[in-house]
Length: 407
Ligand code: ASP
Ligand code: MG
Image (cartoon, rainbow, N blue to C red):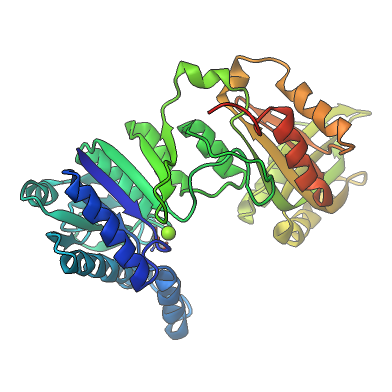
């Protein structure tokens, strides 16, 4: 088999960890597999490079940031390769350019356009392990570009697709994707598999396993991959296209997002263009808002509520202040901090009815009050008082049988 693995910064974060990675690669070779490995910079190195840049320059040019940040991966590929050589494994390191990673778009947040795997294939054919620098590529002009923070996930998925790997494994410091955060829900279980869309929805509500862009890429090109731990040999979670059997499970997972705030504007004239006015101002201020709820007008006035991270509350209030007077005398803004968001995600929702009712019932029986509600095709989110969010996650997790569901 041709196996592509990716090791993140934590997994290569020390000499011991690098030796551990080298040992794992060695045993794959001994089992007769061809192996290519995409690595990140050693943990903390990229951050340190960013700090160095800021010491010398208030706004470091992005072109130079790319030249600088790409050095982190260049160190780790050489070190991992040396550790492999020390174990007697034939290995070579290759940079993004040598791996044929062609990028386009802006510096520090480039896209992968294409990959030319010629050199990688040649080395693999010679029986060498190929250690590839993640996070970097070169554009048409031959300039170094990086893919945005956390971008080695994307490098790995794209690389696996270009060499038509039989298996792509993303090795990290978590064991896989869980039904809930095990620190919050003690009975959370590791999922044997999850669909791209479910992982994307869970990521959007706070379950940080991988950079979302790389999951989107995997979905687009049909790259099946496994998320597993670099510190043990337990099977991880397979991330793949959805298939029929997946729909039998109503809810795949529960996710929470803390430190949320709500703003409600009342007394909005019931006229075209009002929502655009309000949201436009927030867009211009580059503030991300999350759940948006507006009710039908009565007495000629409408109201809008939306949520955001508590850190953005001050900016939202400031940005909306001038708008309030434009809206006229009745407009008023109230806000509330100290809330959190609970979401349940699962493609099974499409074919099961009553999922929302089941969730609300569990929360009601748990004495947990629901604030706002929003839904998408495969997700239901509610806000609750932040102090109750962990209880909320536990009751919902067990109401959907996630503590006990068979693998
Ligand atoms: N080293 C880069 C970062 O820290 C890329 C990565 O780790 O995926 O963002
Ligand atoms: Mg990383």
